Figure 1 (cartoon, rainbow, N blue to C red):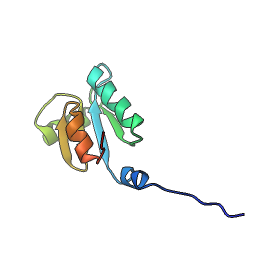
Figure 2 (figure 1 turned 90 degrees about the vertical axis):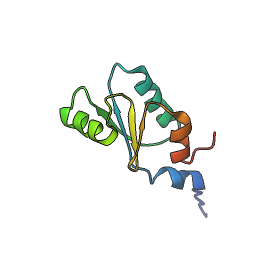
Figure 3 (figure 1 turned 30 degrees about the vertical axis):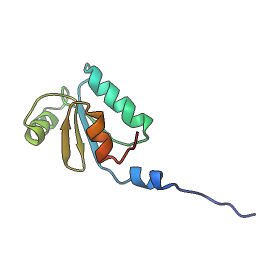
Length: 94
């Protein structure tokens, strides 16, 4: 019996992004961004800047801002849940 496994081009695209989400537990936009990424099957590192001062300093260094959510996609920084820009970086055609 032959077993065929199909991997779509979409699955291959998803796996190669390094995504970090800098957030806080009380930020509704952070929650929305993380839920959206999960719905799109992207893995990401969730960094709570309220609990990690080193991460807060890293976020400030990367973005020059204290606003959350801040997302780092392969070194490209976006402050806020800018769905259009994030989709473009992640090659999501909505």
